[in-house]
Structure formats: C-alpha cells, structure tokens
Length: 209
Image (cartoon, rainbow, N blue to C red; front, side):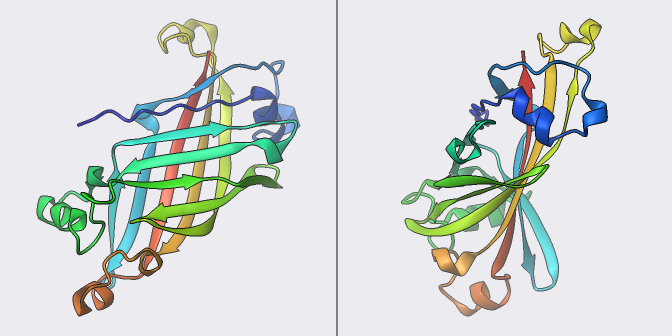
C-alpha cells in the first residue's frame, strides 16, 4: 500500500493563540515547518446503507496546509486524494465503488479540495472555503478545522520521537451530497439503498522540530 505523502507547514505562534488557554502557555512561541505524522493522520468517511452507517477511509493522499497566524486570510489548504485507495474493509464493495457506477476511478483518479479563503471562526476553529472536485464536478464547500490542542515534548522524549519538540492535532469535517458529484446515481439501488449524505473527516497530527 502506498504511503501517504503529506506536507504541512504550521506556525506555533498561531497555535498558542488559538489552541490553548493562556494559563497553559509555558513556552515562548517559535516558528518552523510542521510535518504531518502519517501514522496518526486519516481521511475517513461515513454513509448510510439503509439505516446502518458504513465507514471507510482513503489511504493514499497529499495534504498541504500553510497557516499564516498574522493574516489568516492568507492561509491555504489543499488536499489531493487517490480514489482507488478507498478502503471500507470489503474488497467486493471497494471494487464496486471504484467502478463507473460510483467513483469511476480509472477516468477520475483523484478528488481534490483547494481553499480559496480561510477565516477564523472562533478561538479554536478556522473555516476553509473552496471547490471540492469529484468525478470532474466542482462545488463550493466549507471545511471547518478544529484545533484539538498542542503540547510541548519533554526534552528526554524528543530523541525518541525523532527530534520532535512540539505536537499539534487538528480535525476537519464536512458533509456533502454525493449526488451533486454524480457518484452512484445510475440506478434505483444507488439512489435508495445508499444514503445521499456523506460525512467526511480529516484527522491530522503535526510535528515541529
């Protein structure tokens, strides 16, 4: 299985402002490149089959998140997901999802999101807006990004973690209508058995050295 290629750049000054309360800040702000940890980063989804939620993930992707603490409107978020890497834990179902009935992965190998704007919604939340493109169809979506927290790594543990001095975690979620993108609309089973709303979640752990 192809390892995810994930490149993420973050600035600690912003994280200290929006991810922790003032009483928890014990270290001076630093700057530097933040790298996502593939072992603790996921792209997940959930959709109902009749009444039962069916979950899955995409395992081959790239994520770029460049956050500008001084000017949030200059921040950018971009994701590129390989459709064929879909995994619901059932090979027959995954092969069907890759087919022309659903994602048509051979003709449309990637789904993408690219922010056109990022704004601060609250002390621990940003909202990235931009086009989501699936099967060649693009629709504007809003992607709320919650800063789950951050933590300085004690010096004795830094070597064990490859030189990491600081860890931060993020969660982005949204819901889309698969019919807007022409995914699984060709027959009655696709439109009645499987729900139209798909919940998407990105979990990201980033390290700073």
